[in-house]
Length: 212
Image (cartoon, rainbow, N blue to C red; front, side, top):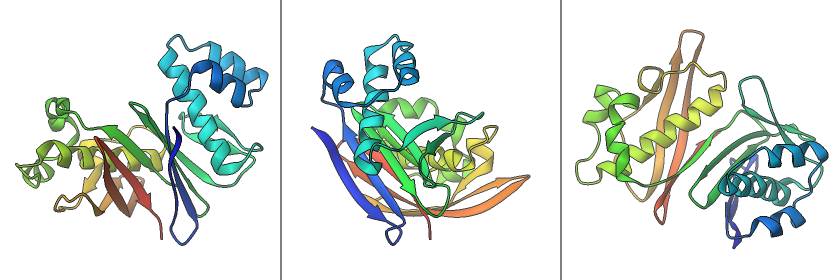
């Protein structure tokens, strides 16, 4: 299927793209430009699924930015763009790759298959106040929104050593099919408030940052 969704955000300062992985490995190798370094990196992956994710991420970026932009990683494994000043965030789950690019500020995105095993880890990433705000009737979906918000803001912070449970705080919200939520990073050297949007896409939960 390829490109599943593409839309502009934040008064055209940002763009969101989602790619559905349906291609074969052979097709992607033929249609994604790869440098020698890229080929070495691709060959280092032992699993076919990881190779497909890696290639589709670059195929989606090609659709969004053109051929002159490539992805590199800094010392914290945060993705950066060579050939563009845009900020980037990447997520993948199941058969989907999600990328958000922002011209103005650091950004974050998360996409996750909705699964009930999130119940087994909720106490590891949720504060007691947040747990009390989760709706009983839609607990699994509600928890996935919380997770997506915290994962997105972790990527915004971009320096690791950030506690999901204690240093990323999400304001109470009523769960709907889509909506906006306020949250903040509250760490010793960094305090900032954010607004994020969530959307349910089939059996996936998508969450991304809305910069002003």
